[in-house]
Structure formats: C-alpha cells, structure tokens
Length: 397
Image (cartoon, rainbow, N blue to C red; front, side, top):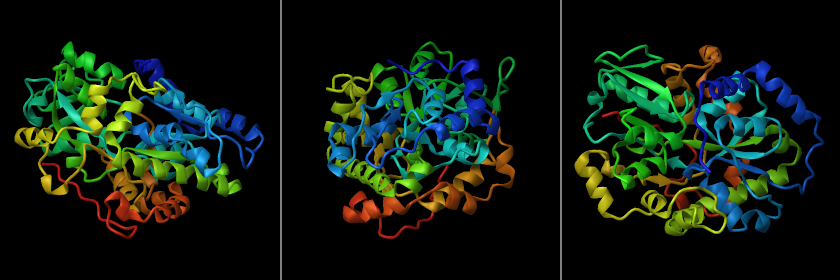
C-alpha cells in the first residue's frame, strides 16, 4: 500500500479540516466520546515513512505493554488528510505529524492537542534528476514538496532564495529562469514523476530519496540536516484531554516512544528490517535496500556525499536520520519566524499575530518527555549535550 496521489480535491479536504469551521464537526465527535479509560489502548495512526519509526518500533518491541498500557495494531493511513481526520475525531490518539502542520492545527484550527516529543530529526533531502548539479540549475524547473506546511517547504524555499531563485506556485506555463515552480505531491508519486521527467526534483522524508538513488533515477543534492542542524521533521502529537485527564497513561506512552528512539540508535539495521515490507508486521511497502541506505548506510556513502557536496558540514556529524525526543523551544520559535517568510498556498492568516515564544509555550507539553529522558540517562544518551536549551544552527550554503 502506498500513499495516494494528492489531488486538488485531497488538498481542499486537508485545508478544510485544518480550519476552525472544518475541524469543528470532528472535534464535536471527539468530545462526544467518553473519556478514554486510564488503562485504555494506545491507538497509533501513521504514514508509511521513516518518520513513523519510533511509534512502530515501540509497538513491535512491546514497549507500550512493558510500560503498562495496551496498544492496538498501528493503523497505516494513506494521506495527511486521512491522518488528521482520524486524529481530530479521536479514531487514533497518537500520531506523528509534520512539525509545521502541528502549528497550523493548534493555532489555525484550534485543535486541542500538543506536541509531546520529537519523533525524529533530519531524515529528509533534496533529490534531483541527474542533470541538476546545483540549486541554480533548478531555475525554470518544477520541484515537488510533500505539503505546504512542512519543514521541507520551509528549508527548500530558504535555499532557493539564497541561490537567487524565486519560489512560485500554480505557475501557468513555464516558470521564468529565476523561478522554481513548487507543486504538492504525495511522496510515493515523487520517484515516478522524477523518472518520467515531469519534475526536476523533490524534497521529502525518507526513504523516497534513497528510493531514487537505488533505482538510479536521481541523486541527493543536499540533505536537510546539513542545512538546519538536527532539525525536527515529524513530532508526536497527542490530545490535550489525554494529557490532562490521564497523565499516568500519557507518561507511559511517551516512555515507550523514548525507549524506542534509544533502541533505534543502537539497532539501525534491525529497524530497517522491521519497517520493511519483508518485516513480520509489514509496516511499510518499502524494500530493505532503500531503508538500509537510510538507517544503516555504509561508511563509504559519507565520502560520496562529501565529494558531491550533498554534505557540506562534516563537523556536524549528522546522521542521515537520527532520533532525539526533546522538543527544543528554540526550534519552534525559529520555525514560526520562517513560516512567516514562506510561500504557503493554504490558510496562513493566523501566522501574522503568532509569536514564536508563545507558540512554543502553548504548542508543546514537555513534562512527560523530560521525565522519560531522565529515566533513560539524560540527553547525552541521544548524543546531545546536557540541558534543555540550544541555539538553532542554519547554514544555507
């Protein structure tokens, strides 16, 4: 099963869901439900991308049950719209969601939910056709993004502007030599579109960049983690009602996810296997070669990417994808500032008066993840310095 193509109808549906009026019927359905029992099950909703790895590993390895909560088999959904709909209406209660999308949900449509942890860091790249050698070669071309409210869109547009290019959308006819036409496309559709030369590149989460490489249809131009150091992509989103009315249950859920992240860091090849279509639970439709290239790449890959300049900051020692659960406030603050500078073909009126510090305080509930991190030995266990503050590092060139 793969992600469905994001048609205009699908985009309208998602945009409608994430408005106050659109979310209201789903929230009414959620509020009409009886509050979940303190020992009720974890109901995970996910898309089949590596962003979901901690949720799926926690299920596969029995970490939810070890923590004392029941868990249902994770539900693989086919689009962001389906995931949002299932979450807001209460069909699922734990999801991974694009970090900018949580901002839209919380402040644009007033969904009473919060980020409780980061699900992973980095794990995305700009992939292009073989004839593209640098960003400026994308002038006059079309590039696909997974969604307007995504870290992919934010980073790509910053890079394009830095290269002297203007991001545009819905361009009638061929874009100008100094323009790059952006189109929203489902991740699974991106490699075929690149192979058919319908697009000249895309920016997306893994393993779709690795898929293009293993198929020989494209190459990685730049890793996003080499642009914005240790950035969040997807975060763990949970209902505020659960966090406030059953805090012990919520703590156990976060404990299991943090434990899974720690396990993944030391068992990358095994993680690729269990996520693959060859794995016992068939969590994703992806083959082992692409997932291994993401999670457990050979050391020689680093030298290849240094030579091609896909990696320009080797001192950062970033993994292709990594796992660190703490949601740094500085990231949310910087993200809000950059969203205000980003072309977004969706509701953005709420951004005008949204302050970054306010957003970080109201969007994130870090009580549970701090306790979970300390229980496993602190942030150092995840390769991070001690303390819960950091300065964002962004290098576009």
